[in-house]
Image (tube, rainbow, N blue to C red; front, side, top):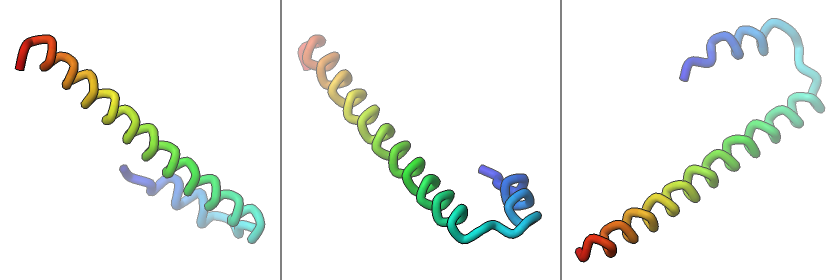
Length: 58
């Protein structure tokens, strides 16, 4: 993705140290959470695929 707009907004003003720390922690958590959700969805998809193949007799 293209984060030019976000980058411009972030460089427009000075960010306080505490707020930056919280923002970065929040962004890390958001990324980790999204990754875990992706992994769970992949697991469910694989299980469903396996069940379909078993039902067809493979």
